[in-house]
Length: 315
Image (cartoon, rainbow, N blue to C red; front, side, top):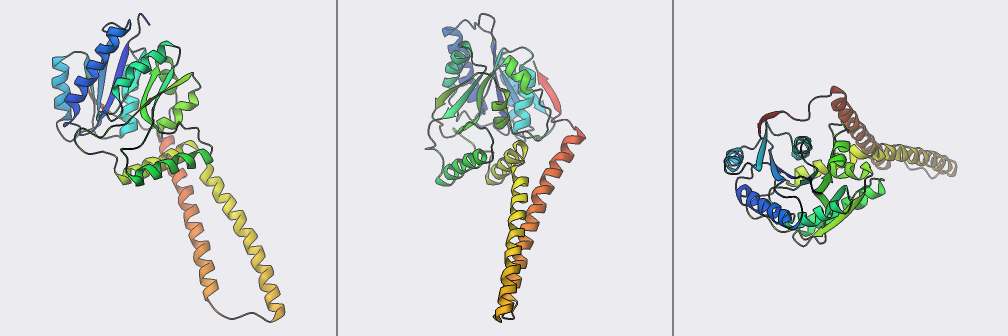
């Protein structure tokens, strides 16, 4: 621990309203950790600007000019939250021994970073920040989140419930994670697959200080779907099961039709036929859609396009 360096990676997108106060809070947290451990001044903050359209980058430049411990990395355009996290970790791991990722709104409790560092000192390579309640969430968000975790578990995905992207990772854990080259990546589902010693720190999530959440319903649904399709092929297997069940149902309907014909109980009509056609057609369209989604993601992977483009780095 005598030579350990801490870097806090902060992905940002249009966070001009909260960024200055958030950075001041994080600097204070680092100073507090330095006073209680042997870290000294070997701690800094790396802010990743994910193509913000407001004055976020201007604020980052001012903060860097005022304090060299504040560093910045700017994307050429918006590449998404997951790409911003990967870029931040890729840059931070060059000099840091442990890396903490936390969103700029600081709804995740930054005061728990000290507990994460303590867990790292005790031998944990990955320390998860886990919410101990969801009181700040709406009923809809709370219910859908819990349902999502249960669905992933049923699909065989290893995931830490109530954990987002607030975590500490050691240098070797980050280096191992960065060896995963896929573009369609779901970080919180991939980290548990690394296999290192882990620990958990529990905290209470707080409301945003200012501004609006960048994860609206549409983005949340897309993110959830990416999590499923990037970690498991269970939906494709489900299609196979549905196809087998449909075939069995069709065989049963043939036997039923023959029996009704022999008994002279058949009734001419189109209602049952139309219902069957719409049902089977719906299953086929859903099946094609799921398969198409996987093919589309496979196409993205084989192109090997860059995950992001860095425009400016403030070191």
